[in-house]
Length: 530
Image (cartoon, one colour):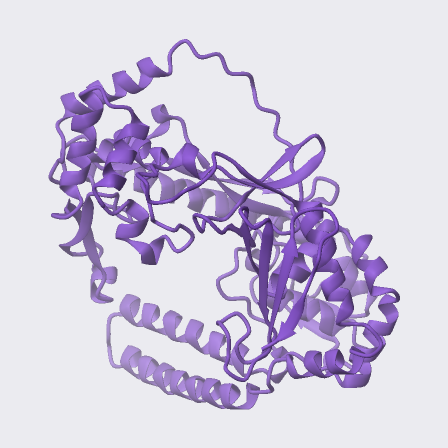
C-alpha cells in the first residue's frame, strides 16, 4: 500500500493530513496487509516534534518503521535512532523556514526593484494585461507569462471621481450614496464572479475608504499589505498544530516599488492630500483597546437579511447571541432599499423551532422514512470508473517516464529531463492515490443507520444539550438557507434533502423542506414536502 499526501504542508500534523490519517486508521485494523511502514524521506514525513508524537503509535500497534537514513528499521529502544529521527524533524522545520525567508525576500525585491505584479486580483479601476514571457526560462517553457496592471476604461473614471469629490469636501458616505444614486456598479457588482458573498446592490463607505488609501493608484506596485500568521488551533492540545490566519500589516511594513511601473490614475500629490484628509478626520479620537471574545454562533454564515440579501453578522448583547444587519450604516441606500438602521434576530428564537423541526424527522411514525432518506443520501459507489481512469493515467505516466529515460540516455539536457520526470512522477502519485479502492467511503446499511440513531437516545434532548460546534456542523452539512423578514417577523428556512442535488441547488426529483419560523416567543413551525 502507498500513502502519498499531495499539496499538504509538512507542518500539518499527521491526523490532519488525509493520507497520513488514513495510514493511522489502517494500522488499527488487526487484519491489515502490512507489518511495517517505509518512509522514503523523513524530512518530508516528520516536521518538528511529529516523530515523537507518531512513532509511539506505530510501536503500540506493532508496526515497524523503516527509514533508509538509519539503515533499516528504527529501534524504539535505541537512543541513537531516536536522536537521529528528532534531528530530521528539526532539519525539516529549519528547511521550511529557510524556504519561507528566501521566497519572501525574493518577492520583496521583485516588488520594490522590478515593480513586478506578484498575483492577486487587480484593484478596482485596473485590469490585468499581458507583460511578456516569464523571465525564468523553466517557467517560460511551461507557458507562464507575466502580468501588469492597466487602467480599466469603465472603472478608472470612477476612482478619479472618488478622489475628486473627497478632496472637494464630500464625506465617504456621501460619495457612496452618490455613486449608488447614479447607478455606478460597486466593486462587487462590477466583478460578481469574485465577490459571490456580496450582493453588490450599493456602494459601501468601506469600499470608498479602501480606494482612497490604496497607493497603487499612483502607478507604484505594492506588496506585503497582509501576512500569514500561524496560530495554535487549541492551546490545550498543541499536537493539533497550527492554522493560518491572514492579518493586515502596518503601513510602514508595505513594500512599494521604487519607480512607477503602470499607468497612474491619480498623481502622488493628490494621493498624499487624500491621506492627510483621512488622517485629520480621525485625529482627536480616543479609542480603547478592544477585548476580543470568541463566541460560537451555531448558524454563522447561514442567516441572510430579507431586505438587502446580506449575511447577518453575529453580536452578543447582555449575554444573548444575536444576528445583526446594519446595512444603512455601511452602504449608500439612495432609495434603492428600505432598511431599518439595525435588524436583530436572537439566535435562541431561531434554534428552538429548528431543533424541533429536526427532531420531528426522528419521530416514531417518521423514523423509517428518515432512515431510507439517510441511506439514499450516501455517496454513490462510483469509484470504479474513477479508478479505471486513474489507472489509465498511471499507465500513461509510466510510458512517459520510459521516454524521459530514453531521452536522458540519448544525451538530452539532464536538468530539463529531471524536471520532466519529477512532474510526471508527481502526476503518477496523484493518480495512484485516486485509484486506491480503500480511499472510497464505505456505505452504511439501513440497520447500521438505525443503530446509530438508537444510540443517540432522545433526539430532542440531544439537540438541546449538544455542543455549539457539533450543532453548527450538522446545520452546515444540511445546507440550510435562512432568510429573515423583519417586517413579517418570520424566517424562511430551506434545505435540499436530495442526494443528487446536495449543495448544488434543488433537483426536480428532490425533497425540499421549507420552514416558516416566527421570531417571537411561542414560535410556530410548518413544514411541507415539495
